[in-house]
Length: 158
View: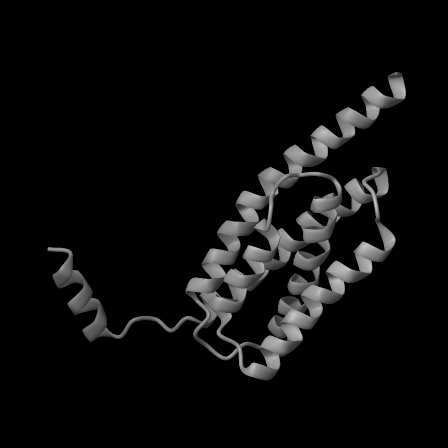
């Protein structure tokens, strides 16, 4: 009985943490999406591939731990692909990484347990950190508006 209560508390904390990180994660993805118009660096590409893998792993782990989120994490991957507008080859690599993350954790975690919940916590933290770092890179890469663009945008605000 006590063991079950402790397990329930751990699950609840993990779900609450995952949901709170999801909001931050989604916001960072949206920011990354809005700014994905410049040529990314090799480090950015590495982070992007890792993020795709994390999304796949979390998609499976949250399903196993009955989070009842449906296709939420897969949908985040679809949004990321739409925002990045990658070449066909890069898109294939991103999808491969997502599927690899999903399949590797599907082989390892067939049911929810403490290790699965710990993996979810670690992945959501890492994914949120990657998404924030990627958004910061995109913000730095976004060119400043030219004086004529500033004038025309200020005219719209009048």
